[in-house]
Image (cartoon, rainbow, N blue to C red):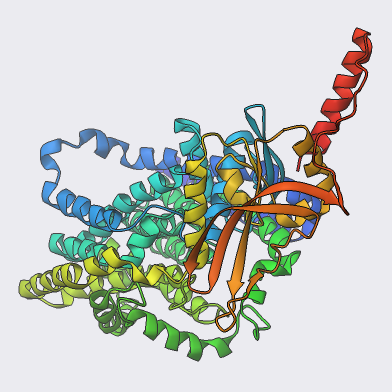
Length: 628
């Protein structure tokens, strides 16, 4: 028996060594493919045609590992063992967040682009955001699109919902509404692990009282999914430290991979994931590896490829033009200004900012103490609980994410577009609060904090969410809601819309083309007007109003030129000095000659069936080529 053990030991060590070398090899191969070997043109093809399948493979392997890890426990779960009080608090918190905000697209450029990508994933499993699309006899076809800069996990999940329930733009709100309850459940679980049942309730109440979370819970963005994946990865890290087996490692690592595919900066959290894996290996004295983990680096290849074809080839993707005076996306020189704006957000008035004064105050008090606690625990990790170990190491991710935002040229938390980027920081603050609670032995401390959180929710947060004055300054969001009302009012979506935000209309299955394209292809649009392809042709435009003279001027990029003769249909002043208008295109002219009216001439119909079929084919070919 001893001889067998002596022979098995080196064989086992050799197997682990071989797997370690395979992990190194797959990592090097992923780096070479992602950053060097694949040319730009091929990178576009890989991302657009393989991106969906890469995320699908990652997601399936993650679900498989979760079932392998938790399946037995879930099957053994009994309803009587469920903490129904906590379930009720989670449900109540989620309801509060959802009922006081209107469901709609809040941050337009993010949310509509994500919806558009999910649409192409649903229709043909490609990663494209549509720019031109047409309804052709009841079948909607995307004619042109781009690979967007936003990572793929959120549109992938949304496309799965489309697959299961049918395509609807409102599926984005269903997904985020569901994720709201999942997130609050994970918050409760985290608090319970760190400081007990009441601490879990405290975490739920603190987030239920954050209007910013409610704003995103009722929107179509990826912020809720980002929060869910951060906490899910943290909790799976706790399980990895506790179990130290291959299944928990796979679940933990693949959760980190999917987290990196939610938001651009979430790739930062791969650092604490790697650190926690290495710490357990060091404590065990061996490298625990599974075959899925060995191939995991290759499942991240699409991330650098997407970054290259978007940020490296399209400088406009950084949106530097939106903030004149800035010359680089990240700089340490931005930190003082961004910190000042962060303070203005966390402690601003309810009419200006969707903040929570209770969460901000408690978080700012807790973070320094939590930092000291982390420094202390780094020396005693070997004797700490799995929850403490994972939270201590994961605090690196929260710190790095906040530091990156402070170095970002547009990292101003009080900006109407950027507020949502503070949500991971809010999560870090809540984790800090929950982590230091065990340092206070008196149960009265937690009860007092629960009362304070409940008071803040009822006295400040609910009135703030009910009024949502903080969202009125964001004109693109209001215009999007107004245009969606126009869509809902039309009996049939058989019209063509000309709008530089064409993605909005396409994702609502309305034929649309950008204004800049319509100007270049006015002859094609005139052809379709002559042939009654569309019941009407509309154009959306925004006018800026001079406060002194009252003179209205078109927004840059909205002018179709003198060739288009327009008739106003509906208009509304959504802000004091702007007028949003939808007009009908009455006719298109070439000089003084209308080119969009039917030809009054008499044409001879060929008698030969072959000639008729040839003419029909020629017409259809011409019809397709001239689709706007």
